[in-house]
Amino acid sequence: MTDATDSFPHRATGEFDVRVTPIEAGPLAIGRMRLEKTFHGELEGTSVGEMLSAGNPASGSAGYVALEVVDATLAGRRGTFALQHSATMHAGGREMRIVVSPGSGTDGLAGLAGRLEIVIEAGRHSYVFRYALPED
Image (cartoon, rainbow, N blue to C red; front, top):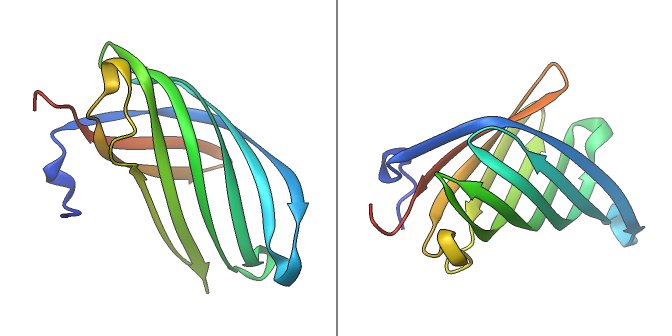
C-alpha cells in the first residue's frame, strides 16, 4: 500500500468544529474520549467517534488512536465512511496518520479511499482530504 499523496486524484478542503468529551481515565494516564465533529467545505457533514490517548500532552509528549464514522456529502455523493487515526507528538514534533478504513464506505461513498490531514492554526481546525472514488 502506497502513501503517496498523488495516488489520490481528488482534494477536498474546509474547516471543522470538534468537541472532545472525556468518557473515562484509565491506568497509566490512558484516557478515553468521545469525538463529535461538524465538517464544512467540500466535505459537508458530521462524525462521531472514540479516541484513546496515553502520555502527557501538557509536556508535549503523547499518542492517540481513534475511529470515527463520518456521515457526509463529498463530490455530490452522500454516504458514510470510517476514519482511522494514529498519532504521536514528542519534543515539538508531530506525526499523524488519518486514513479511510478500507471497505468502510457506504451508499454514494462506497469504495472511497483516502487520507485526511488536520491543520490547526490560531485555534481553528481545517482539513485537507486527498481521496479516490471507484470511477477514478
